[in-house]
Image (cartoon, rainbow, N blue to C red; front, top):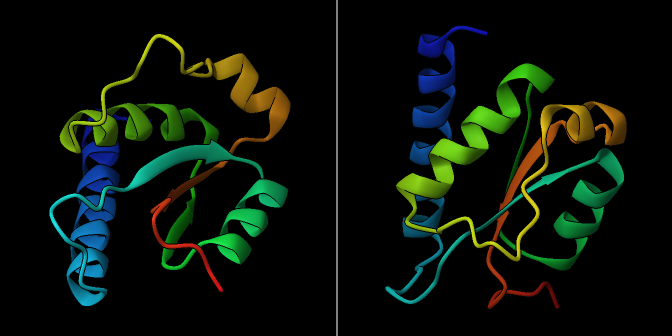
Length: 107
């Protein structure tokens, strides 16, 4: 996957995050949580939180887009957070990037 494609995916996802936050009246302290997940976990997050933004990506791009989005959103990758590597992404079928807000559970 080339760098331009990763940048385009990152910009598109960032745009969706900003529009959805504006549309749903996010306040300054409302932040998006980003997760690399499988199909099953994506469904669980969509069931438990609203709004969610989920997109399926190619395994070779999802990690790069995830890392770029984390830095753009100023959500630092903490040392306690296990950032998956490419082998883990392939083995666990982590091909969805999902954004959700922990303060907005679905009722």
